Image (cartoon, rainbow, N blue to C red; front, side, top):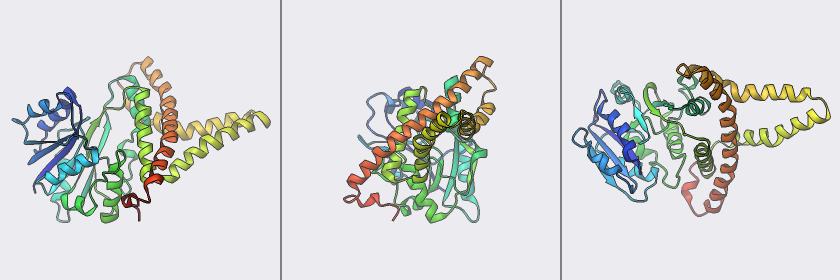
Length: 328
């Protein structure tokens, strides 16, 4: 087997060292690493070049390329029959690549292997963020899991068969790619030990922007209609109805409704939080618990604003861009 790792970068600067150091430390080294730079104006490319004496890195400069375009350029240039994909903003466990490629060595090798990513928090807020928005391995159903392209491996032929990454999308592009692969090859083998450590957003405004962009991407791609519909009904119908019932019928509605709503929205984040906060002080634990509902509601608001923006973009272009009808 020949193995290529691919990645896209843009203005990572010194931060890219975290990924590159973790690539140096891999127990199984790739045959090549293809990095596409989308037109960095800082020292990102200079830093990457410093690692070429330690790693088989090829750098391709593609100004203006979005993530999908960058990945497609990297995969097209890659010589490997197996492609392992990751992102600039992560660090990889030493056995990440070894775990990802192990299933390809079986007699009945898959076309795709799903890795995993976990939060790499560096503050109390980031601990709360990871617990609120990122699943744990125990939350994953391997039959339906759609891996992030921070941690996935696939045959180069499967990438071509799936129509490559959708370059018309700037966010959620890996979900479309996963869904196409899933339709072609069924559930992916899940390797939870192939871990990419991903730092959550550092503050609430950055998180709001991230989830707004994710949700806008959902709208552009026509993803998760049911999930978004449930969110709108919960906040725009269920919430006002509960307030009216409590005011007009009995305050008990507020207590019972609030309790059920809190259980539905916050039990899972708090369960994750208690498994992540061992190194926090008692005061930091209280702060993290207080952040959870703020983060959850902020994310929901960002999604409710971003989704219709994406849908508007889609409706304005769907008659002229056939690739938007990717489900058909």
